[in-house]
Amino acid sequence: MRPSFWQRLDRFARDLTPFALTFVLLVINAVPMQIPGFAQVAPLLPMIGIYFWAVYRPDLMPAAAVFLIGILHDFLSGLPVGVSALTFLLVYGVGMAQRTFFFGKSFIIVWIGFVLVGAGAVTFEWLVLSVVNGNLIEARSAFYQYGLTAALFPILAWLFTRWQQTFLQVE
Image (tube, one colour):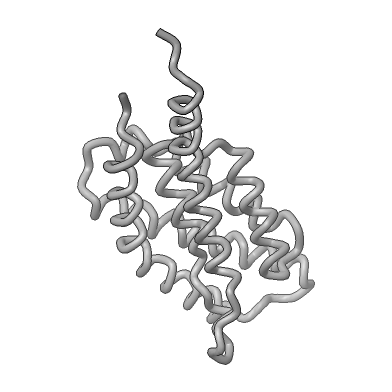
């Protein structure tokens, strides 16, 4: 029997949630904080979402969605257009490539994977921005940004896991 319109709409809405949740992280990331200097060290929240969904449900977070999130991140954060898109696509690619390794492993292993991928991504972005800027940018901000991002991964991964278990069960 063919699913009804409402069943198809429900499935579409559920399938859209990984992108939507990552988009919400992007918006949260763009909210100006009244903390001096916070913008330079703000955690890369969208990168957490991209990595998580690349590892656990890449079927619901296609590369085009990752690219769009990256372009929007560039516009909202004032970075040269394409820098975050390229960085996020690299994170996505590595996450997808390592899916089989992470399957059945403990959360700590997945977190270590994110820590390593995040370090590479932040370093890559720092190098690209230094080249675009024409001189080396202060690395301390990138280091703090990376540390905050890695520290927030367990909290967001826990929330995403609960979301996935509740709303994205495979039928």
